[in-house]
Length: 242
Figure 1 (cartoon, rainbow, N blue to C red):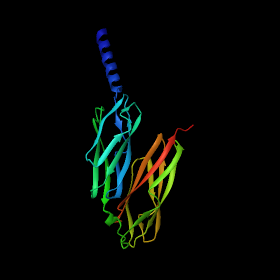
Figure 2: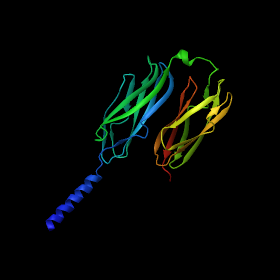
Figure 3: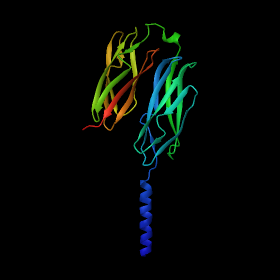
Figure 4: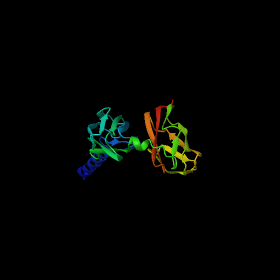
């Protein structure tokens, strides 16, 4: 009977220990990035951040893309638990046209994600189309497409008001505002702007749990035929609070 108890205890301990062993685990808060509308021939760059959420070393064995027009390169190939790396993705739009979707495959030793997939999007238009100056259609104008909050202490909630203006001769409709993470909140003042009317989007970025250089995006979709999707990139350097 004593031996039986010992065997049961041993099995329970083994089960408990095995349950605690996670192994390497790849994670990225942002798995997709939209460059919005770009002119054919332009080269655009975005950096994805991946983190090892496991309890043993993560190997980025190989990184490739679904198209020769896209190049992806990691900043490092081995990540200790809680360590992060940047995957720099470069998209060349030469000889491309229309809506583009390209995949980046990250091959790892994470048993549940041996091939971890990221994606980029872009709407490629010709120089002739982008240079059209018709004003009898809805047209959107924004104050800026990038905003840097600078260096802040972790835990701060940052606020930024993005100005929007209807510069065409038809009613501008904001159909959607998307954010790349749950740490960002957006509040649209109006979803319809008459010609010449101004509006704004209040953007809040919660830095709780962040550390280091971070990039987040806000995508504005509208009925502007030449700029149906505009992307605003937010930057911040987060340091530990004292």
